[in-house]
Image 1 (cartoon, rainbow, N blue to C red):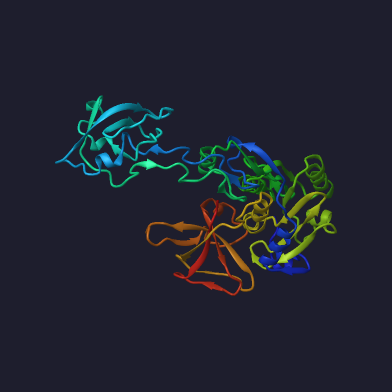
Image 2: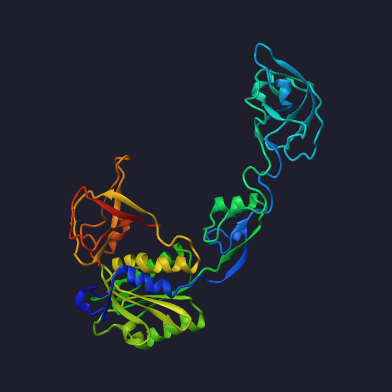
Length: 422
């Protein structure tokens, strides 16, 4: 994992973060749609609006356990002048009955049961003397309903059949799936998840958990990238670590793009200008290698190999994490047809100060201080701030701070832009 410094020769092209992302998104289009059952749709993105198949509610139904009545019969009822009605029917939830109600008659009704056509209000059981126990044949109403239609959920008051329940681009979560089911929908059109292959490069990398010889370090980038891709909704089809060897990297790339049909390949390491930059060596004439005005993560590569988008990220772990958030995550969301490609930004005061390199946008892994619920604050997750090699400090990061290019010093108390990590 080699330093991401301006002298590392990321490429002759210099871009802002926005310019590099614009190039990426211009090459990205939503994946094809497929129809899936609701149980398989959670976590997927709608490719088409979901329209209600039925009215919600499906029929006028009771919002309370109580008594379906004619409003005129009980409009003046109170504790001093109770009204006695004859009980002529029982209507549990799921019952298809629609009993007629003559003046002076009522029906016991349960929550969710269809309200009789002749009824114009529901009296809660709490407003009936003795409740259900005393109402087998008659009910004594001790409080008037607040209005005609009281405690009746009207047919279609939530949504009418044919109306839009959710637009295309919506991520289907448990609440959305429940809403679709309640609208009579059992299948939805969603975008196919992008298939991603992760290739981590570096002869210094060794399997984590083992013993390390001089010059070796534990390999963490593939774990970071694979889990980040899954978290962003992608299907990870392969995770590979290769030495700085052109043939090994070429073989891994061919396997990902041709054998597995990956839509996206994300590599780490090998994109700078050192002597052993394997990604640049193999792909230097096929994709663009550029310098992006950001810290960390200045050397970047992007292009298309066959049918796959290829992201060449730098090798230091913090650079990998911040590059993923800045460029790869938005692209993966765009491939899924998401309506929102960027998370919301919070404005929080900095709990401490730090330096930033003017002319480059700084991305700082950060943690949130919630001790005062009315005034959260933010500070770097490590004392090294945005140091690209501080991998262990990522364990404390729950967000990242974005410092503009024209800011060289963040002072304690300054409001800064904070993006929560998913």
